Image (cartoon, rainbow, N blue to C red):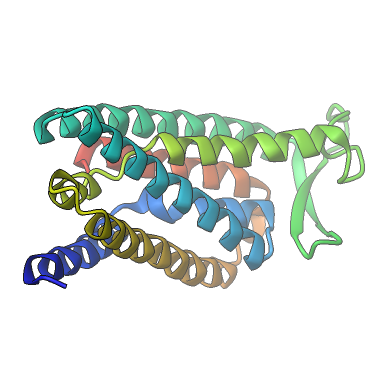
Length: 244
């Protein structure tokens, strides 16, 4: 392995680590959604891994495509910046809609916890007297199609946002060996950067999940979904405003 490639791999590891830690969108959505939805840790980690692979994989594909088409680094960075803005706005919109839905859901009444077969714990609001009876999620068994459909929409919306979201620091790291047609260098950089990013995402999500489980919301428990949506909204806002 050449000295230049060693330096490049060291940079990939460092940049991947820092980029993940300072970017709350890499871990906060999974922590707060897992808390609000009552997911077992294995489910939260599985979706973190899936979204992380999609996030890194899409940037690798676009980076290699840009090299194949002869795009300059500045053109690639401009394209990734546009993707970044789109992903940030998508995260903001998703968080805001989830917040509004969670607020509406929480205002309907106090909550009851239900333990399900997969080990997940969900808190469902119990309507107060005189409140309209819901015919969807809360009035039906938890395997009701209405709940399953909403649950899948939430997960796949988050996955789509991560796939569309760029990993901007990866592009210049990839283009150096790719421009020299160094397939081993490209694979090594992608592996180190991707492994560091996804590994750090999993570590932060696991720590955050254990941390929020220690927090007792008590009277705010029924607003867990609204709080999760607000946290996602803020993380998207930070990405857009601070460019992290």
